Each structure stands twice: as C-alpha cells, then as structure tokens.
Length: 87
Image 1 (tube, rainbow, N blue to C red):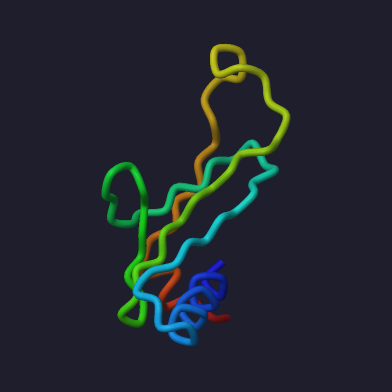
Image 2: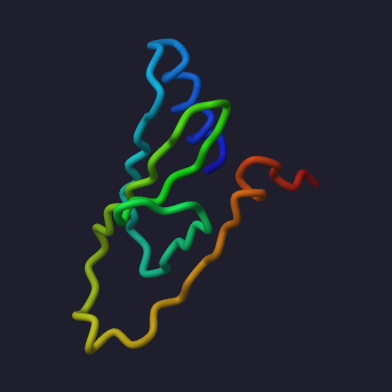
C-alpha cells in the first residue's frame, strides 16, 4: 500500500499539485484502520511535502451492521507506510 501513496505524491509533483487523493476499493470484510491525521472526516498523510487523502470504498457484500458482528480491523501506522519493514 505504501507505494500507492508514493505514486500519488509523485503525480502531485509532476503536475505541481499540493494535494492528491487515493481511492481504494475494498472487497474484504476486514476494515483497514490507518492511523493518520484527520480533518473534516477525511484521513490524510503528508508525504514529500504533499497532502494525500485516503478514501476507502467498501464494495464487499456484507450483511447489515446489526447482523455482521464486530468487524476485524487491520491497523496500519504512518510509520509502516513511510518506512516499511523489509525482510
């Protein structure tokens, strides 16, 4: 996922834009929780002098919230995206 943010930042550089948007279509019942800054309900990451907003769109077929139970959450920190662990 981190390369996606870097790709948006490079695009912003190429077109001299101060901010960009990363829209991700999610087909999993797991919820991705990015520990980013937030403003007006939008989560964002400042990267290479650019502001990258992250907009997840849940497209999986799921029962309603009252029937599905507690969602499994995957937490990703800013540090994990900017400085990924390499093995």
